[in-house]
Amino acid sequence: NAGVMQNPRHLVRRRGQEARLRCSPMKGHSHVYWYRQLPEEGLKFMVYLQKENIIDESGMPKERFSAEFPKEGPSILRIQQVVRGDSAAYFCASSARVVLTGELFFGEGSRLTVL
Amino acid sequence: DAKTTQPPSMDCAEGRAANLPCNHSTISGNEYVYWYRQIHSQGPQYIIHGLKNNETNEMASLIITEDRKSSTLILPHATLRDTAVYYCIVRSRRQGGSEKLVFGKGTKLTVNP
Image (cartoon, rainbow over the protein chains, first blue to last red):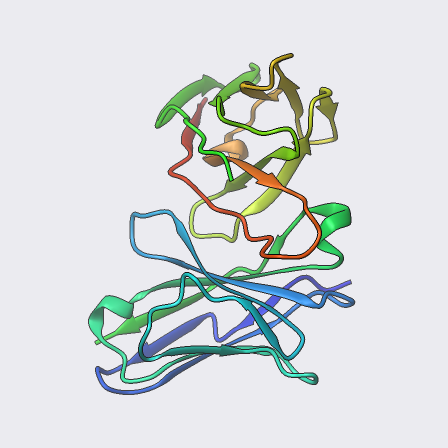
């Protein structure tokens, strides 16, 4: 049973370009969470999605950032017009029936570098 | 969710038990204590969780005080590979609503040879 898969693992963008980060949850998981970790800092929650629905986006910046989790395919975190401050590791986590287990399974992260 | 307080760093000798404390004095009755760790540059890894009884699994033991205001994660025989940042998180498991984990600064555990 494959774990949470994130790609790309490393992404380099120039200021003003778009970054798309993909997350395939574990098989059978329908809950996806995105976290951001700036260099030398802790993990900050960004958004929580279930299939086709955004449940909690309280940690998402108001502009340039968006997330989706379509019925088919991976969850996508999209950053438009990237700036140097967007350079960070972006982690995705998934869970099944949250109430039962409470456990989140994390991917290995996507590291975005903005030049 | 209740706030947690952890020491910023700890050291432990290889082969000895590592005892990582966590204070959560404002925990409420329906909130669980979770422990995760993050080994350098990797994704966080679930370790253990509990409500009020002590818990043990293949990775660690979790001791929760009777008043539930603090807990201790015990790694019985620490190895160099246990060097990581350990996060204590308090979260309710209510149905519906956001179930996100809120990570604090954690404890940087260094296991020394």
